[in-house]
Amino acid sequence: MVSAPSPVLAVPGAVAAVPGSPDAAVPWHYGDPLGEQRAANERLAVVDRSHRFVFSITGAERLTWLHTVTSQHIAELADGRSAENLDLDLNGRVQHHFVLTDLAGTVWIDTEAERGPALLDFLGKMVFWADAKPQEEPDYAVLSLLGPLAHTATAALGVDRLPETYEALPLPGGGFLRRMPWPTGDSFDLVVPRDQLMTHWNALTAAGAQPAGSWAYEALRVAAARPRIGVDTDDRTIPHEVNWIGAPEEYGAVHLEKGCYRGQETVARVHNLGKPPRRLVLLHLDGSADERPAPGDPITAGGRAVGVLGTVIDHYELGPIALALIKRNIPVDAQLTVGDTAAAIDPDSVVADDSPQPGRQAIERLRGR
Image (cartoon, rainbow, N blue to C red):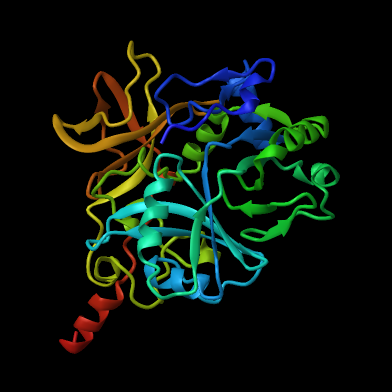
């Protein structure tokens, strides 16, 4: 799906991303991409993410029905609460990642522009007799407000406080404000009527928020080792490989203590008995190479392929960095290369997976060990 260009691209200084980029419909930066990252991380910045695909689900059974066909435990999600969620195939491979918010009798969902129509189509086919009605909401758009000074913008937002993590507050003119745990510790999404997009943009910038492009958002996301579906994942990715496991309060997208859903067998088997074949890591890239590697490029160690590159971006403090899916048995200190570029794993990005597994422990108890 090709999103229509955002009106924010007409803001003085806005620079569009290269054609074909998943963020081509919104500003890439405003002339100072590294400074915009600093503002988003240390002060306050607003990012246009209006190319996100937004749809809603209404009906009395919207939550209990969605609970049965997706990976997250949301059957009893409270009003004004949000969660991350996944659609998996029969083999437990990730098809869609999305964020949902239940507010005043409606579930609001936003996801990647090019994947949204397929997700909406799938959910529509799974309704059967449930009282749930998924429908596209093209007249709604997403903005993100990032930075520790977000509290200074409450008056501009029309709220008297900021929401807690995964909480959502209604906005006076429609839509809502929710807090997310990433890409920084102070991240907020506005899901608002599209005809109010520029009104909110102007109010937030007037309140001191610096315009920041999708470059800034992506750089902070990569530094936080948060994957983006379709860029940092492939058609074989399972949730364990990219740290999408955990209850909502643990910032995950797969709940390990819920009932049956498509792909659950793989999730349970890997959790209880196995280990994921790959893991998501943050790479530091050698910036002196003549040609920058690109997403999808193979990663090698000792001349053999060990992984594939995801998002590649320049960070205002870390320099050139990337996310990558690599084989789980590759040591953290391995010397990696991507084409002619040397790469090193950031050890802080490696999630330990050496804890005892429930299934293995049970087997050992049965064997008397």
